[in-house]
Picture (cartoon, rainbow, N blue to C red):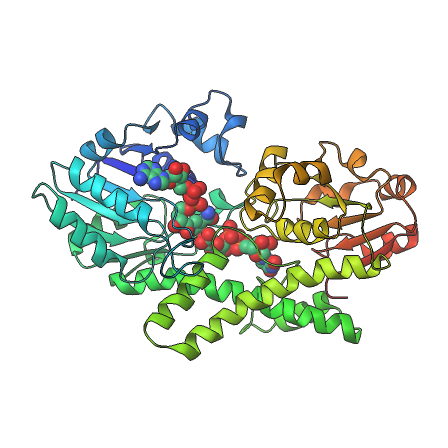
Amino acid sequence: MNISKICCIGAGYVGGPTMSVIAQKCPGITVTIVDINEQRIAAWNNADLSKLPVYEPGLAEVVAEARGRNLFFSTDVDTAIAEADMVFISVNTPTKTYGKGKGMAADLKYIELCARQIAAASTSDKIIVEKSTLPVRTAEALQSILHNTGNGVNFHILSNPEFLAEGTAIQDLHHPDRVLIGGENGEAVQALVDVYASWVPRERILTTNLWSSELSKLTANAFLAQRVSSINAISELCERTGANVDEVARAIGTDSRIGPKFLKASVGFGGSCFQKDILNLVYIARTYGLHEVADYWEQVIIMNDHQKRRFADNIVQTMYNTVSGKKITFLGWAFKKDTNDTRESAAIHVADALLSEEANVVVYDPKVTAQQVYADLDYLCSRSPEENRRLVTVVNDPYDAMESAHAVAVLTEWDEFKTYNWHRIKDSMMKPAFIFDGRKLLPDNKLGQIGFQYYAIGE
Ligand code: NAD
Ligand code: UGA
């Protein structure tokens, strides 16, 4: 099967960068990314590349190379489906907020809508690729919808989960550790292998059965998040015992069986996927009656919630048990550096806890807009939108943000925070000048010498 036209439904953090790289590396394939969100598509088509809806280092260059040549962004979903040989589904699969499985299961309504639209718009055989992260055995449901509502054409379903991390998406897509393709139809699997083989070494393209591929994605995220929760659990013990969590991480990470990555203690992991995917894994295990398995993985989330809460509690306690009316400046709001994505960012939950104590929170993040900060807080429904706007200010200049602050809290590990003139900042702050470093980012010795009261996770 030779693929000449690809359609991707969903122009988000995964669909946008992933398909842009396919278009860049496969100039012979026409790639059309479609979305129902007109604003998002308009932003992808913006002539000003700094206005793309997703910020990722290197993305603008890839889009500049391929857009208009063989990469297109459109809201005409039906036409793009009808013309494609291969359709990727890359829509969001958030945690359900209603009904059975509320707060745990993945909400598959967007996936089902896609399947019905694909079935209705298809007048020729197609390969359908699950790019979204899905519960194991979703392909079965997709197959049933496609065959029962379609026009009698053939659909082959493949699972091709995405492993990119935000902030390094383009690097991850150009040089993936592996590409995973699950499927039952050999020709369809080979067609997708051939697409990736344009730039990925063949030995890095793994093929499995559908269910292994679907389950591997949830499992990979669960293992990664588990490492963060494991080191975060140790960070609390370090704070009580005089051990230093970075030193412990280095000591264990040099063991080749453990490895050095994902051992950085933090204020808690965020992002749109770790929590959602583990909750989904827990839900799936429970539905099969595997309660010990479910409880085991749920602990990763419990530990993460604890880490966010105790960071906020420590700020209040250290500042003489009251932050009411005090200015606390947040450096960072994104869930990690080099992204404008704030979904499930620890900053949101730490801010919420401090706002409940009537603190005045000032936020500076190099890539996150004020509108997004307020939207994140409003979404929690902890207080009225007016109250959020009264208590929270978003500032574009870091020095202005920290001027006359009682405390600075580092929530995201943006590199630029390390380059600031901390002498000047200390002089402009209220005394004692507190820093709570949720990323263990700043040089503690130096800040101590300058005269800050410096507290970091895990030391
Ligand atoms: P996103 O919310 O950024 O993008 C999803 C897009 O799909 C939205 O723009 C939405 O408008 C669009 N959409 C929804 N229903 C649609 C429909 N019926 N027709 C057309 N467009 C529709 O989500 P994302 O971060 O790109 O994640 C997508 C999937 O990829 C999720 O399942 C997620 O778990 C998985 N994933 C995400 C990441 C990541 O880093 N964000 C990494 C790996 C996997
Ligand atoms: C993660 C996975 O790394 C990707 O492989 C996966 O494709 C993606 O989820 C997904 O399915 O969405 P992402 O969430 O973008 O990627 O970013 P990570 O680098 O994994 O960081 C997640 C969170 O953990 C961040 O808040 C980060 O600050 C935190 N983290 C990470 C730590 O606190 N310590 C670490 O050592 C590593």
